[in-house]
Length: 248
Image (cartoon, rainbow, N blue to C red; front, top):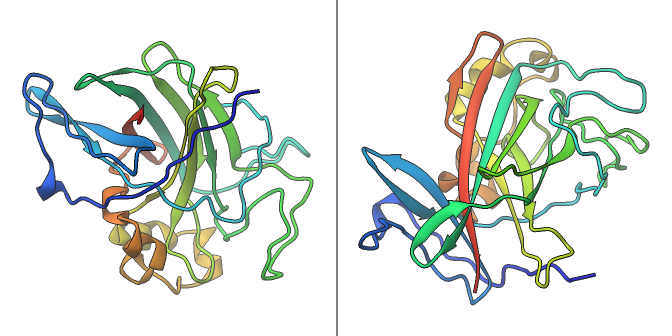
């Protein structure tokens, strides 16, 4: 089995530091010769590739092998986690020769806490919960021919010491000659989180203790480049996150 490639460095860039490449209008940066990641965003009639920082995997990743789009249900007992619905689409591209093209066949893992700050499938190191045997709010999708992977989840809750976030990991198929892996986190506008968390079931946990500007991982590792832009839908919210990868 091929080994996953790893990110060996990090460069934090603000949107004011974007660089345009002639013809392809692409922006990129080397991260220590490892995997590069960029976000494809609309800019009038052109598109750009914008560097996105990697972030820590954290203690709660579990490779469940659950290929599914709707990750709200716990397969252990069929219950669905309550919360404001969030439809999230990843648009994964390959950055090559100054151009971004769709990357099909990439495995996108998503995992997060529920509305009360609990992750499934783990025993919390701080002793707050033991959810081993459960697998709610976890799963993966394989990108289609357009590089898209769609998930239905809930707006995440909070737990002590962290701002509100969702974890994700993108891997190329392990059967390839050289697999690639990119891991990071998604964040949310604080004002929107305040609004969502004022509703049940989130309100049951009380006021969160850390916002974006006080979260160490967010501040040290370019969290402002990882905020998910959301639009309201009839049921909740929808968001799209476009990112391009390249091995160096």
